[in-house]
Length: 248
Image 1 (cartoon, rainbow, N blue to C red):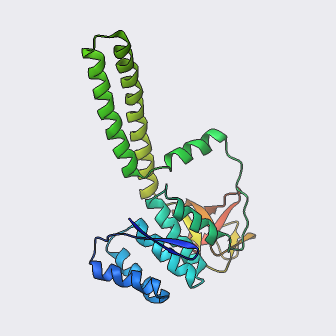
Image 2 (cartoon, one colour):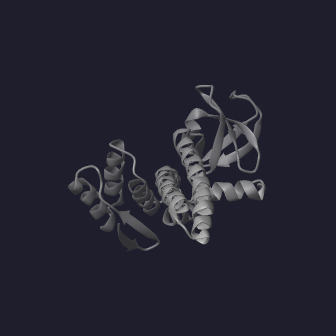
């Protein structure tokens, strides 16, 4: 993967499944400071297939044009596809620092935080490859146990095969979790400048609090067409109109 440093960002320029010249045009436009052109081409590329790298570059281009909310959306979508990427995470945090709302998340049980951090260290494909590697090692170690004469080698084979089998099962669990998170889109971004969160799904409902564009929320009730119930990381909940948010 070729890496080009441009001020605060590191752009991932990789091969694209679409025409190389089109991808090259987008990269060239970004480097030359023609960010609107880059946004247009990266957006067109994404219509032909999702890519963490292209979403990341799109986020960088939006950031350069001060379209912070769109930059956050692009970075969040890149992170869904590549949850272990430190560059995406860094630029996402940088973009979030320019939003209005400063929401302190509820304290999570440390085991839940640790589990989510572990699962997010690789993508679904990454965990799938890890499970195959663990299975291959489990087979090798099992053969070592069955056909070795020295007692210490048999012990290594027995216990090693057991550990690799556990790693195989956990890797499959983590791969399933990542795939589930990828297909079940519940997170969203506020896309309007100031959104009153209502107590009920009605325009005349009581205003509970205000959220500003760029804030990430969780959609907890998606059953209505014009209204969605959302939850904020600090535990507050309420209703917003569907056109006030965009799913990640």
